[in-house]
Image 1 (tube, rainbow, N blue to C red):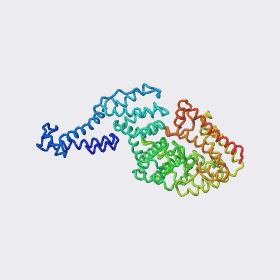
Image 2: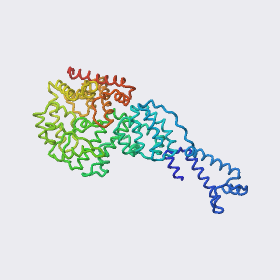
Image 3: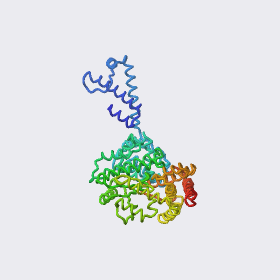
Length: 553
């Protein structure tokens, strides 16, 4: 009984003062009971009415008089009764009328809220559960009112409650920890991927948030140490897949809480890239591919991955079967998802060429047949694993520097950007935040063109911008505007990709979806978002025009 009381306090199911009152009353009443039953060793549960017997009982309990004992008895019983009535026997009050105008389908929302209180038809829900939900409901509705899509979030919340099972315990937990309720609602609103994962495995919510390292970034070495303890093997890769899912969920949870503004800072790309690299390295180790050299390119090479991104790589050596096995194993989906999709199409001759090439093959290709865009892609090359990594980088840098001295470098990069727009564009320049005029790729090509011309080898976009400023190529005001504008577009990308953990490169065309995006980014409506969005793209394009098209260095 007393241990149970302490547990109820630890789980925030009873307030501290009520636990202390019940503990004190219970100990006192049990002592009274023992004094009564010790005389004749019989079940006695009433205080004697005889004055002398009552006096002896009071003295045995160290009271000076029967009156003092009676007062103390009534006081202890008086503390228990209201707690009992509040929890067990109070008549449930009629639920207050609630404002359902925040929902598009108010009738469906009303039914969902009623079902949360009642529970499934085949189960009995205790009065205590209904009572706790009456406390939870206004808190829940307050958070739903701030959501971009209250209807969808309420639906996800109902599914989560049903999956959790211990309805009363969950309601108590959320009432006692409003921040956890906030996190749950924001997660369902921001990411269907994360919401579905939590619904499949509800225990992950507490498992992740109770981890004292929840807010800490994990290094590649730390990821590898944790992966090594999971029991994965060359015949059993699901532990890696499950680990990757849990870690991305952990990042989403931190993201929606704006832990250090994770998605808008360079640390997010680094953290996600480190997770991807650890999963890649661990899988290579399991399949015995230590002799395979892997070069990272693109956002992976720059340690700037976003949600739903593939891993752009080159394979160097002769281990064709190992590379094929790696690509298939990494992409193979199971109930735990996949490990990561590896994209090796930037190799010589693209998809038509062999998956793995010798270093000499790369050298001959870059010397004789490679186009400028293939050399330009090497801006973000970095070695991941394998003995030939540093040799490849030295060779790549020599061709990259040579291309940087071309007189037609800027016109060629501009033509490259136009080809990308024609090939990948959606038909609406406004919606194309990635390939459109002043879009994210224009901001990347601007920096990479200046890097090539100035011989600044740096795979990471942000650090490359800093070096351009240090060398006086870009001014302080230009760098500030460029980073702010590019960061805003990456933030849009992150919010859109986070929802399903899939690649997205255009804004939604639906006005309702545009409104949801604006709210998820902290704007009060789409018009506010539109102004910020247009300003960001205008800033990037103006700098691109000055520095690349007009060649005003």
